[in-house]
Amino acid sequence: MEPNSQWAQLLKTHYFPECSFLEAKKGGRASWAWASLLEGRKIILHGALWKILNGRQAKLWTDYWIPSLHNGKLHLHLQASVDPNTRVETLFDWDSKTWNLTPIQASITDE
Image 1 (tube, rainbow, N blue to C red):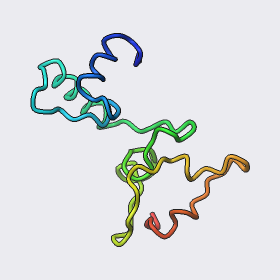
Image 2 (cartoon, rainbow, N blue to C red):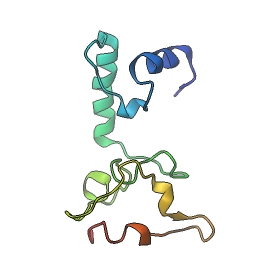
Image 3 (cartoon, helix red, strand yellow):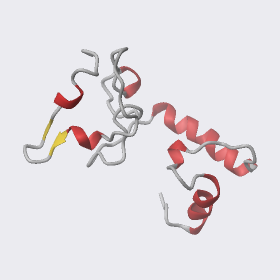
């Protein structure tokens, strides 16, 4: 809730400087407090979905963001090769305020 607080910045600097809390790994020298936070994160993520808003934070292929789909994420065709860091915002046409699935149509299943 307060990513700019002193304790949050300390944790970020020490444990996950190059990613978000949701992507952070435990590491070999994790404190008890850090390991406990990661266990709590598992519980949160079990039922959590991204709220898309502008789509700049949620990853198109790896994050859970589509409530109507099994596991909340897109399902790829077996032969599809995609960039796992592509963000949901790439599918939104801001001028018409509609989704544009054309760029990924060949990579996703009919579901």
